[in-house]
Amino acid sequence: MVVHVLQPEARTYYDLDTLYGESRELDWRSVELPELPLPRHAQAS
Image: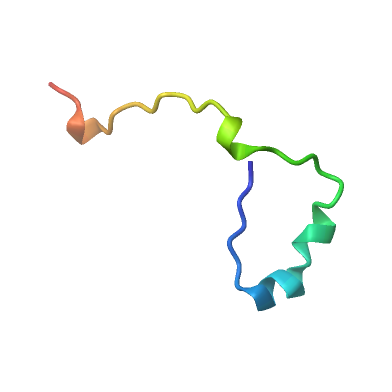
């Protein structure tokens, strides 16, 4: 998954809607996320 956060002018300049126009749309809210490991500093020794 790629997320682009752009100002309107940059979005127009890079024209990402055309670049990714043929890609399938994904409902990101329905994607199951894996459990992330704890950071090393938070793990018990």
